[in-house]
Length: 403
Image (tube, rainbow, N blue to C red):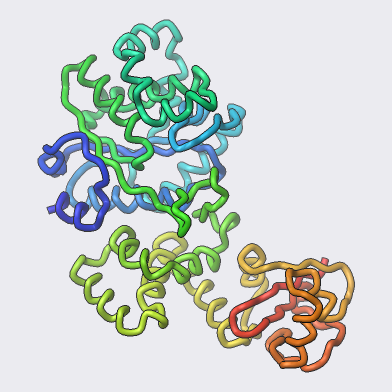
């Protein structure tokens, strides 16, 4: 049963009704939504995508909503200050980019944009048809509103919840959509949709939230905290994406396996057992990195990520091409130089002290383009006349780019 599977995977965080298990039935309609507040979707958005697929496999019918309208306003939830408003043309461009990305993961998805039903909605009509159904008192009591009252909350952001509520009402009316799925930081906005549908149409609707993905410091993965892992390889290279999963701590890996993997829970238990025998080998991390990278970046991306990973581990970069080096530019510590310099002078542009650099060279802990050096010398050989790779020890890399 899909409800039990989602619950065991930890994917059901908050529910609006204990009847949710009866709602997750074939042919019932649900939706997920994304505001185009960046030029790419990110790792946190992958959880709704995969949940969408799970629900469709269980026979439910899904809708993906792009917030062409809500993106113009800005969602206050999960933020401690008001976001900068984006230009209309920027939101329009981002909406098209989002639609393209969504089709990569959900090629048959029914994609809608809420700007299409808001663009002709007159302000007085919105106040009468939507605003009339909400009492300010309960709105002020919502946690994400209360938390912002001290630092400042504009009327535009305060109204965001009503706009999202109308999205749910509109989809309910047009597509008989009875379920909304979103991140736990959206709880207040989502419940507003239930209230509006009940008030205007006297119908019951439901929501459940997914857990938020957080980093090791407990911060949500998002642009707001500068810790995003983007689904666009131009913003986060395939190698960087792959390595993010490779480097997941043991305390997260099995839970994330349940979130992102389409393997059965029994298979995941077996993986957990095998992983626990020798966790230093990162067996579970490697499997999940392969599975998620394949889902997001297809076979070509996975092969590139694995090739770069192996080349760095073996200290042999002879098989890497220009695209592979470009993929490493944002993933490794990069040092840019404009002329040929000594190895020590190049490394001094990093955080290493001159004393440490000198000792590393003497101890043969430094290699350049795969060759161990035992003396300080000028770096002259650049692969493709642009790149060089310096390795310190076994795990620290510096990508040198000659400009």
